[in-house]
Length: 105
Image (tube, rainbow, N blue to C red; front, side):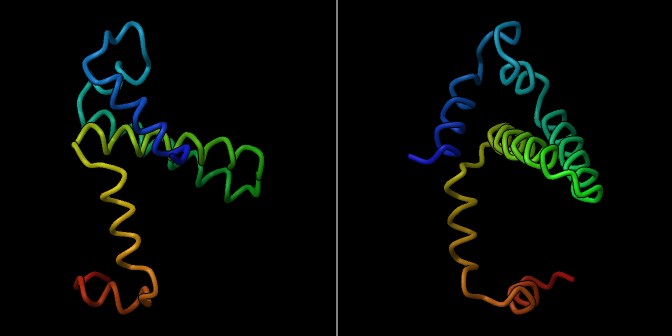
């Protein structure tokens, strides 16, 4: 089991837990919109660290981004394996070709 799968399992186990006992439970209790907002905040912090070429802080912030991504996915009932399956489906495809197939810019 990968560390991301283990983290996902921990996050899912916190659903419905007492928000006073767990940061994850507290986030999930606030709803999917708050989970998405927190993910966005962490992503911005990672972007700032990358722009400043602060490798140490970028590593720390990237871990926060991955954690908050998994919380956001859990809040919406999307499994990590669904995301990994989508990445596997895209593997070997040109990004330009893949985006054209979706009609995205």
